[in-house]
Image (cartoon, rainbow, N blue to C red; front, side, top):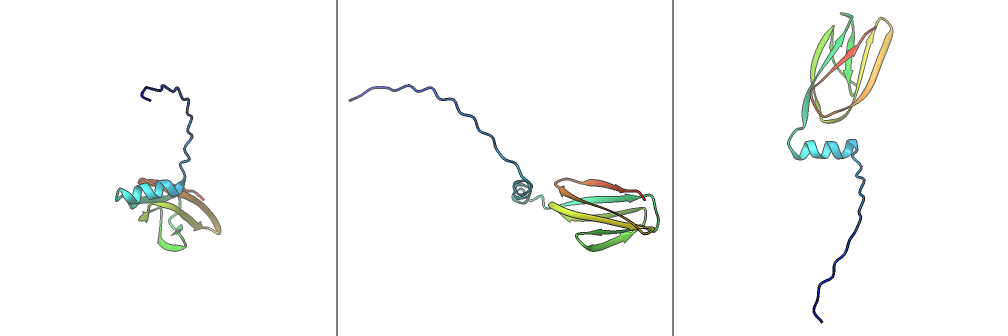
Amino acid sequence: MNGNADFAVNVRYTGTFSADINESITRTLGINAFEVVIVSNRDDAEHFVNGDYIGKGKRVTTTVNAGQNAFYSLAANKKESVVEVINDNRRLTFNF
């Protein structure tokens, strides 16, 4: 038997793009670290990234690995924190 068969197919695909996939892509491309500038309105603000002290003051710059990172700032007995997925250079502001 010889012949041709024609088919018409409808396909719908919904991809899931998660923080893990983004981290894998940036690692594969060699984009593993980004600069984060933390800005505050207080000179006595202490800043932490992933639990590590990184500096004190109104402006602190650090480099973090791509992916999810926890940022925490403390001043005048007040604290602010945020968890961010970092996949580019970023500026974060913590005002007290």
